[in-house]
Length: 133
Image (cartoon, rainbow, N blue to C red):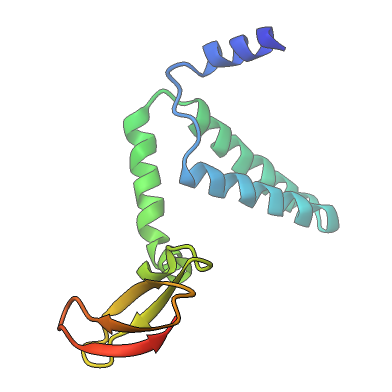
């Protein structure tokens, strides 16, 4: 097993490898492969073409061209990623913290849970209000 891993490391040395566009092509080839089971051979040929492009990009040594392709892909799909991106308030441990909005300036405030009824002071506007955590 170590010999195979060493061979793979030597083979991939200096190659571009995998990126976001490569992962998209990989999943697209899987979907097309599944579709080709139920349809004609044209979809299977499209699957092979997508896989060929994917492997060509992965084994390429032209890093600048592959990086440009990936940047174009990321630019075209930015709006989709923004739809599924968590809000800035969503990047916390929900079991330990609770988010409140200041009633005056609508600033989001993160507070620890299970502290009972506490007085909260907004850092932005200085407004004080009471909430149960």
